[in-house]
Length: 130
Image (tube, rainbow, N blue to C red):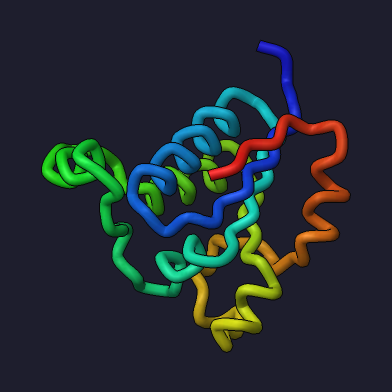
């Protein structure tokens, strides 16, 4: 597979969307693609340092997946960073709204970005939204 640039915007805090975004990021990254993820709004809270890799389900699939041996979305995102070189950025505006400083977030997250910068970097990339 030819290398591509993939930009993933994640704003949902529900299990199914976080899980799919993490799967796209991790598979994309370990397949040699340049992956950049932007976490904003409700997607940011699960990435507080030490927060469990769980989120409320949106439907039946999410509820069932919670009972199966499925790697958590946090594990998959971290593997995307460690194994595939993905960059995962918290949204600076969401951090301001939630009164979060960088030290409160998981250490494997990249530097905070504004949406304008993320979208400029996403130019000519595949863009996914969850």
